[in-house]
Image (tube, rainbow, N blue to C red; front, top):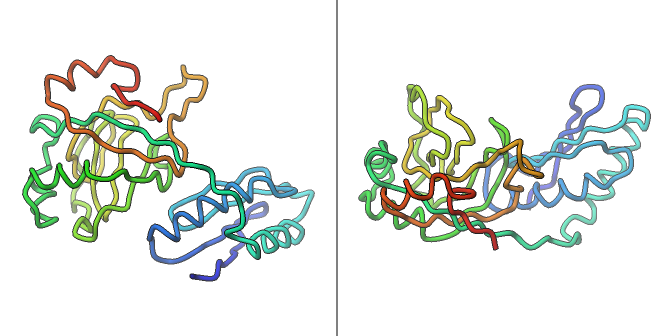
Length: 232
């Protein structure tokens, strides 16, 4: 297990890095410590990333005091209570119109499109970080053969709900956007909605399991709450 390293970030921030390579253990440690850090004296904000935690503190409290508290918390890392994960079951359409790059991504992963769909739906993937757009999740990790590169050129736009893949991760797009990730499916899931009491649907550590549906079923779910997703 890597020893966490602490780096100063501007006048009121610290970055705690748990490793230089993304893997499940490193990501889980970062997410768990973000919850711990949020409760430390003087900390105004703690945000977990793929392999690190950013801490913003009250400058009046001072960097030395907060860094001491962070070090003390790191000394007992792993003893904090782990919150049970929530599981979202999310209908996803892999038909050609909604998965324009499934064949290309499958070939890079060394499997057929049918096998790719089976693998993408086989196990829940974890929300490893939220970023790029409000509420937008990075999900993983997929098996090693899904360590495929991003495109060298951008797709001009993928739609809201697009499921994309690269580097053993999935990204579920919160809004229409250009991207270098390949679109392999589409959901009606709404990651972000200002009209909801909690605008962000997902929390880091949540699990998402995709369930393949036909194009007809998908069209019927587009106007359903959360695109037919079920939270348990």
